[in-house]
Amino acid sequence: MSTSKLDPAPEANAPPLEAASEDLAALAWLHESERDVNTLGRLHAGGFPDGLTLARPDMQAITDMEQALAVIRQVGAEERAALQDDLDADFAGIYLTHALRASPCESVWLDEENLMMQGPSFAVRDCYRRHGLSVANWRHIADDHLANELAFVAYLLAKGHGGEARRFIDEHLMQWLPRFAGRVTERASTRFYAALAGLTLQVVESLQQRLQASG
Image (cartoon, rainbow, N blue to C red; front, side, top):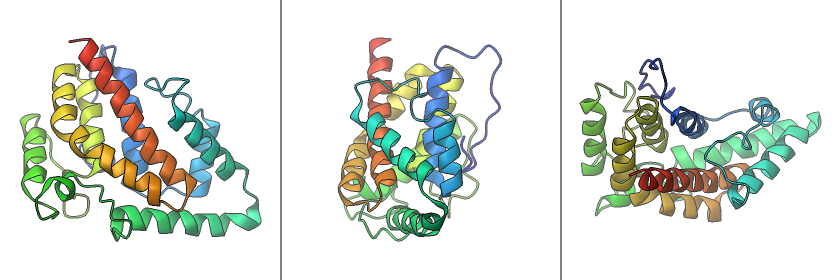
């Protein structure tokens, strides 16, 4: 799936949803690990987020991410280290230490005691297994981590399994992603991570609507 280790081979004759698959894979990559200032600058120079096929011109999240990356790309050399420290601290607060109380794992949001590695995590693992997939480093990045769930949807789209992608979004991602995105947007210290949370939600919502419309 993603660099967090579900790694299917792409099929020939990719279905029309292939481009949407690439959108989800890009977002999974950003949620999976810290990306340095230079990498984010190159991402912006390469057309992100405007190149996302699931993005619409009226999406506020596109504007927010565009502005956040433009600032990162233009920052002077003397300010890069401080900006990198801010980005690293924000990533840690969201994805590692949970200082923002905005876990990137489904189980924490849906379990009655807000614990990791509970029923929702194993339900997600079962979804992966039905497709012959597994998360190799699940002790480090849990099965129900946002990066893995996005990467799984990307995989389903690349394989042409639109119906299964819609079902996974309905039954898993959209059961907790709105709350995660809302909390990160409110509490993140950097514009980039606030924008990433909002962009991820709007892209997944856009995909959900597209899949619903296609039946």
